[in-house]
Image (cartoon, rainbow over all chains, first blue to last red; front, side, top):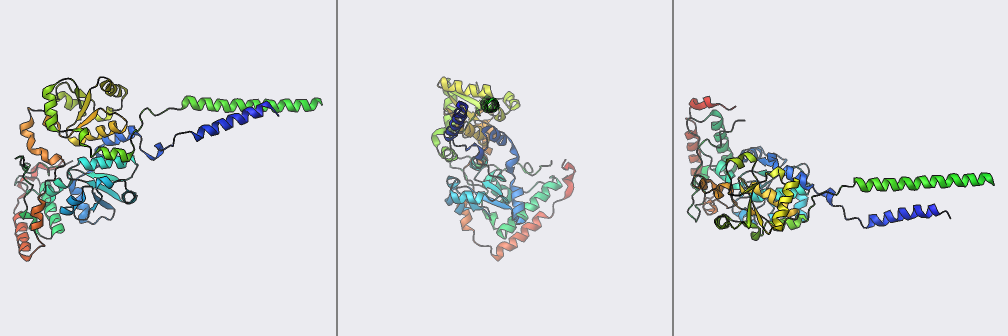
Length: 207
Length: 215
């Protein structure tokens, strides 16, 4: 027997044993931290309440609006057409199956955009595709769509158009202006009232 | 007999070459093997539980107390861009913009804080801005980082008065009066009429102001 055969076989066996003790490679299933940080810095994941409303009114079949608040809050009030995946069960099998539908645009929302963004980061880390966050959450949705602010007389034509779109959308969802009876926001116990934004401030958006 | 010997020699030469080739491949492999310097130390499920842990965040009240105390145990990290930082920031805050978080010197800075027994509190223009970097640091194994659950305006006491009114909009506090919602029942015919009235009210807007136009 040639000694070199033994040497060769020895090297190959050593390599084989080495592979056996390699750490499980789950890196490929996750977004690398540096890339995830770059994605976090990129604001393109944020969609406006008007965008979402427009797609809801048009019944966009590719839109999946996901309410990640607790069940109780979802039942009390939610955006028409949204489904509920509480953030705690985000990683459950059924939720992941739902989020893995590649042809859908998954849009998360919570009360504001902190929790929804956290859910987005975790999903992004798990390499889910086409995920977004509705900026401002249900609080802003309510104050811009349901409680659309009348622009002033001096507002631009664009602002007026946006306002009429919002009014029409609200009527589409709720049938009538019954929502007029509801206050814009709950008065906080601390005594801080939500003051209405100066009209036109939000709707002025040009480019 | 001599021919046989020559064949044997050729064979051994070839074997030697193969052995050398394999060893070379292994060595180059080991040399070019670059271990990622940043790795996740928490699984996604573990990072999800972070979000419900109130001991990992600093509320505005706690932050105010920390600022007053000023013992040097707490370092405020400003994750906004350098322009915003130059314009104004919390006293003694360190500026680490979001995209520069994993640069070598910044990682070293966080290690230094850890060694010195200091805690880092991340704040941004809004809580949402600071939340991403905070999650990244926590997920990659830094344990002395905390998230400020408010916006920069809440730390900046001079400007606080003019901005506090906007703050509830940015936090996760539910603002919709769901009790009032429940009292509203299905649309009645009366409500429809009022809807039309509303529509009429919209109509009389004149286009006087349209000169402001867009772009």
